[in-house]
Length: 190
Ligand SMILES: [Fe+2]
Ligand SMILES: [Fe+2]
Image (cartoon, rainbow, N blue to C red; front, side, top):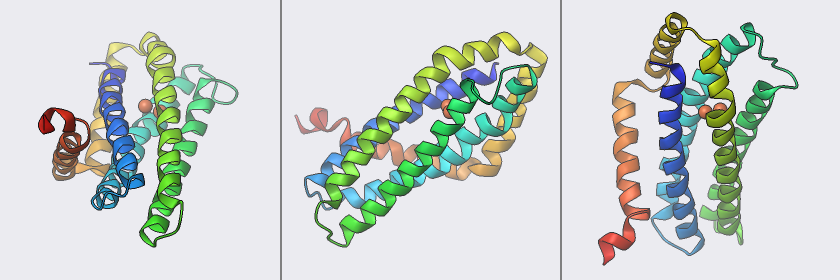
């Protein structure tokens, strides 16, 4: 098993979740009463899973390993990935603050929540594309199978520390429910 396979599988979950996040943002902007609570749950997932778990696997395990093997950190692909992770965190903080403003009834805040979600989605989609197509193939060439197995074990440790089995299941169920509500709605309505 390659560590990049695990990260690419997680990317698929992130891309799906971004689609749900956008639809929940659209629902908020059109005045849905339930959307704010759904967005709170999604933001918890983006902080807890995408940031603390997925990005930690990259920042604490994979990227330092690539730097050790000669991939430059500054002025190279890893520096770009790290600054995009930071930009992503900033987007999540901003969406959270705007969501609270919209709950207080501030005019225009719900529209700004949606606009910030659209920019967050574009940022992460482009970021994931660069990792999947450029950085991870590079990592696959640099890592031998023994070291790959060790990194996979370190990923397991991060997963356990940052998410844990119970939380992992809870995220999964939450995303399934919100996927049914926001992405499969035309199928269930018809
Ligand atoms: Fe990343
Ligand atoms: Fe990633």
